[in-house]
Every structure is written in C-alpha cells, then in structure tokens.
Image (cartoon, rainbow, N blue to C red; front, side, top):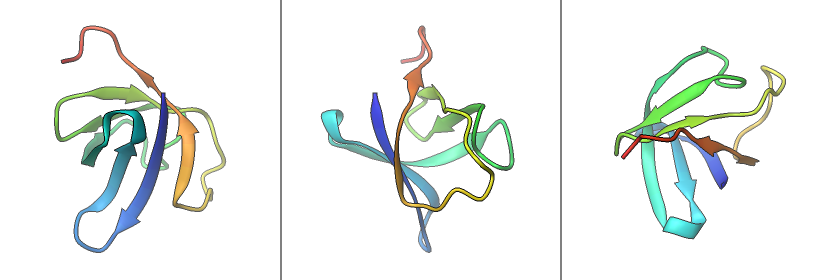
Length: 71
C-alpha cells in the first residue's frame, strides 16, 4: 500500500495512508534509519518499509507492506 511518511514537530514521525484516510504517529521502528525494516504505528499496525538511503528526505511516499495478522 502507498503511504506517506513525514516528520512534524508535534508528533515526530507520522504516516498517512490515503486509501484509508488514516494518519497515525510511528511509535516504534526496527532501525534508527527507518528504512528496510518494520515500523509500528499507534493503531497497532506493523508495516515493512523498503530499503532506502539513510539520508532520504521526508516527506516521501513509498510502497509499504502490512504484516498479516496485525489488526
């Protein structure tokens, strides 16, 4: 699914899923650099993000994969 990841002063990193009209803060991440691992968002979803350069600029729209069995 296409998701937009951005950084905001209020919540830090957040994710927006246009097809679900869902915006949630990222509450946990596998890697400090964000890319190539999983992230967990406030509603409990766990998403796998693609490999990208550590210095990738935000905001960015990427293809993420929701892990099965998650809410």
